[in-house]
Length: 123
Image (cartoon, rainbow, N blue to C red; front, side, top):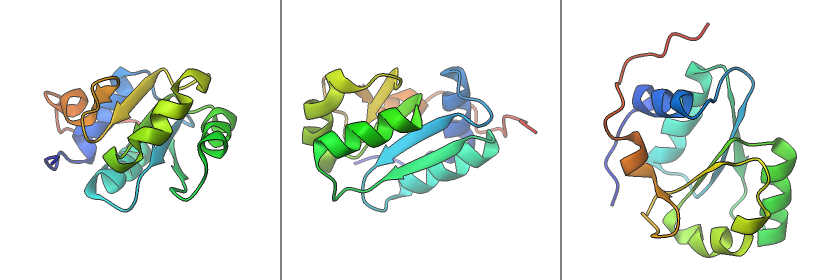
């Protein structure tokens, strides 16, 4: 189970990954606290959160993430099998995070921990 972190911490973690204005962050999961953290953190950076439908087949997910040119891809634990199926097909998402802490991908909680909660101050 994940702990609530807050949009400021997530925004600072995204900024540390090089996400800036008009960059995209892809998100694949059902509604969750993490969805809103990513959504609002994108707004703090003037970036765009691309919500990927969890009902899509893995090839469709890969196409959407690649077409969006997402720099970061956040995936819920329930959808780790989708991520496993497409990980080698992702062309722009250099940071891939699993909310459940999948051993082959970055852990969302670890990625965010230690980041300041301050507004990153992007105008």
